[in-house]
Structures are given as structure tokens and as C-alpha cells.
Image (cartoon, rainbow, N blue to C red; front, side, top):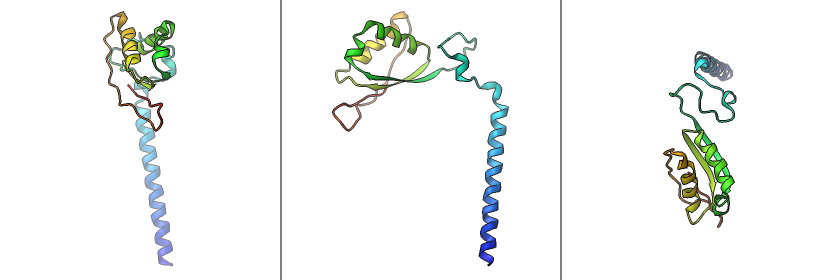
Length: 134
């Protein structure tokens, strides 16, 4: 019987700690509310939000980005415009064994005088259709 009482006390203590942790997290979030900018407030990629101290980070799955897609001028223009709205961006699903598609994209992004660069992963995957991430 003593063990059962001890178990309840331990469970009660754990629950109390969990409640305290949740209260601290919520309180910290409320105190930082004025520093959080909801993503919907800047939908559309407007870079002119008036605060040069902000760092815009994004992730973009281009979906099977390779030589075929990089040869389409209109597609590359749209991709470059999207990428330029961010300071740092991760590009996913690069499928180009020659390595030219990413270089073409970088040239297009920087064609307006921007100075973007990239780091790219090794080709990853279990099948012959390996992907890279930049």
C-alpha cells in the first residue's frame, strides 16, 4: 500500500512540474509577442518591411529541379524572383547529375546585381534518382 501512495505522489509531482513548464513557456511567448512577425503579414514576398535587422529565411521544394526546368527562361525568372525575397533559402529536390542547373539558377538570381552564393549537399537517395539540397 505504501508504494501505491508514493506512485500517486510522484505522478502528482510530475504533473505539477509539467504545468509549471507550460506556464513558463506561455509566459515567455507572450512577453515576446511584439517581436514576432506572423508569416501571413508578409505574404507575397515584400522585402520592404522597414526593418533592416530582420533576417528572412525560407525553404523551397522546387520539385525535380534539373536541366529541363533550368532551360525554361520563364520558370527560372519566377524562381529567381522568389529566391531574392529571402536572405537565406534552402532549395530542395535538386535532381541534376551534371550540376549545371543550380549554377544556372544562381546566375539568374544574381543577374540583377544580387550576390547570392550556395552550398550544396552530396547527391542523396536510395535509387538512381538521387537528390541534392542547397
